[in-house]
Image (cartoon, rainbow, N blue to C red; front, side):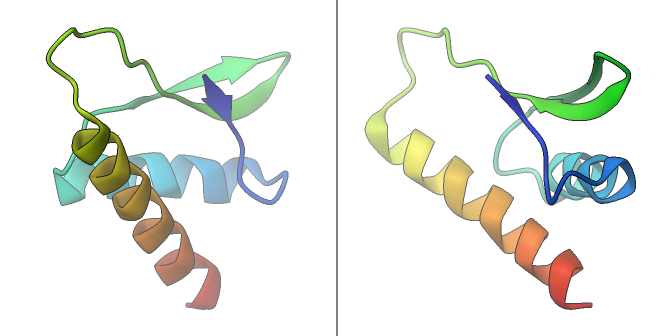
Length: 69
């Protein structure tokens, strides 16, 4: 899955870095058609629905913290 935030390369990169630093889950940054994006991959059999919920919450928490600040 690729995600962008507010159609903004700098914000997208900052969210990726913030989530990596926060540590709840691992995701990476990438470029797609010349735009920064967050790459999310869920392919492990042991990933639970709770893991997904916690990961989404972490991503949103970082994004909201950056968007407000």
